[in-house]
Amino acid sequence: MQFAELVQTYEKLAGTSKRLEMRKTLSELIRALRVEELPEVLYLSQGLLRPEYEGVELGVADSLARRALAQVSGVAEETVRRHVKESGDLGLTAEELLRSHPRSGGSTAGSVPEVYHVLREIAEASGDGSQERKIELLASLLGRAEPTEAKYIVRFVLGTLRLGVREMTILDALADAFAEGNKEGRKRIEAAFNVSSDLGVVAQTLARKGLDGLEEIRLTVGRPVRPMLAERAASLEDLLTRMEGKAAFEYKYDGLRLQAHLPEHGEPVLFSRRLERVSAQFPELLRELPKAIRRRPAIVEGECVSVDLDSGELQPFQEISRRRGRKYDLERMEEEVPVRFFLFDVLLDGDEEVMREDFPARRARLEKLVHPSGSDRVALATQQVADSAAAATQFFDQAIADGCEGVMGKSIAPGSSYRAGARGFWWIKYKREYTQALADTIDGVVVGAFAGRGRRAGRWGALLMAVYNPDADRFESFCKVGSGFDDETLAALPKRLNEFEVPAAPAEVLTGLVPDQWMRPSIVLELRGAELSLSPIHRAAVDAVRPGAGLALRFPRFTGKWRDDKKASDATTSAELLGLYRSQVRQSAPAEEAESPAG
Ligand code: AMP
Image 1 (cartoon, rainbow, N blue to C red):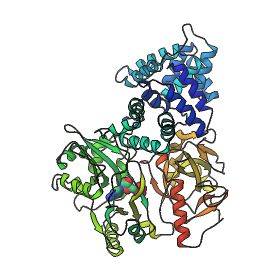
Image 2 (cartoon, helix red, strand yellow):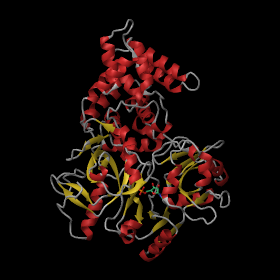
Image 3 (cartoon, protein in one colour):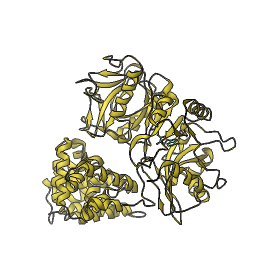
Image 4 (spheres, rainbow, N blue to C red):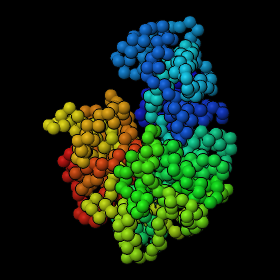
């Protein structure tokens, strides 16, 4: 396919916010591609060069792109800068400048593989002179491109492509293209994605071998599996009922979830919950895991928690969060914030894929796999099987006393396999907060900000928060939160949020409020509140309880936890919020129409 054709599709996608239209456009695109082109195009359309977990970055800053553009269009860099100030988008500026300054030799950027190849080269240029090399490559590409192509090339290299093409929509389009849109087929495609985390691999397999071919997609060391997720219960009795009276209870550690991949030889690779490679942040685990794990290759999962190594006491989440995302001072942090990795699952045991085995079998494998005195940095998650509320409560109390945030109940019934990427009642979490008014904390996504008044004048005073609705692939507002921010956090908010500011309401945001500043859904914060009520303004789970009404959180409060480990689409979902509302209604009289005082 010619890049110019792909760009026509991008123009179509950019012109709509309707998911159905997007899905149709994408499935047409997928059908028109050759098998070899599929992965590249799917990555490119998401603004990526490779699957997200590989973390390949182009390393092109605004200034670098401006220089390349100035070179190609033959105008001064200052002119480019001024133009961008007006257009607000270097991509648009590129399009317009190239249109008004035609170049000799400028015709077309070439085929998709050709453009992709140059983009890869830009990403791979590193070390001395790499900036010059990147400019040279970009300028040569822009020099050939026609103006609309240039717009998308510039947006791509700057990471501002934002076609709104999200994974779930691509999966829909793949189902349309390869499974006639049928539901069962869609499920199998998503399952293959959950195991591989790579849309390129899934698409290519589908194109070559059809739906049945997906079975051949295997667990691979170095390629993360999308994590299995938990549901919640209102009480331990409720949890046990869901589990048919008996479950394995585990400590619910308050740390960072890690998936560790141990190749047969060589260093382990660590992935965060959002599937980023975080190996460099935990050098001690890279050293210690091979001592603790007896059989390789292996893929194991667990929670990494800060501990006092002398007493074994677990430290609060705030401690380990100091190690997250760090690039410098790694050695000092290793000493200041020692960690222990509590393993709770195994997916690959030697050459055996064990995801499909029931949980008791996997736990038995895990117990064999972990050398009890192999390393003081690696341990098994504390577990106990219980079949009465009394026994579960005793275990829960012990978990809290030991510094955990609650317990995880895990099904031990037939069928309790590892369900990658799925949230279900095979795992149920029960936290200490559940004893308070609202059953759980909510992980909300920032979609806007309101200017502060009084003491907060000149800063952000409150944030507009949304939950995620995966069915519609959109973010639905449920409160405006201004409480729980200390002065330091308030002062840091503008800097933390400014890269997400957008001039207009993002297409994927649904709300009845208009904030002073819209934000691209990206940052996730943990909130607590008094209760959920029906609201005419907020749109979370709108129409689910009553036509026209959404759900709102009353008296929302930031808990102080930035959930940097979650992507926007990992936030609490509208369906979960609805579940919380319903469990609350079941427990007491329904709270209705009382609009949140903050929103
Ligand atoms: P939440 O983030 O509140 O949805 O809770 C689920 C998270 O609890 C998982 O993603 C893990 O990071 C964490 N967790 C802590 N202990 C365990 C455990 N024993 N089993 C599974 N997940 C655990």
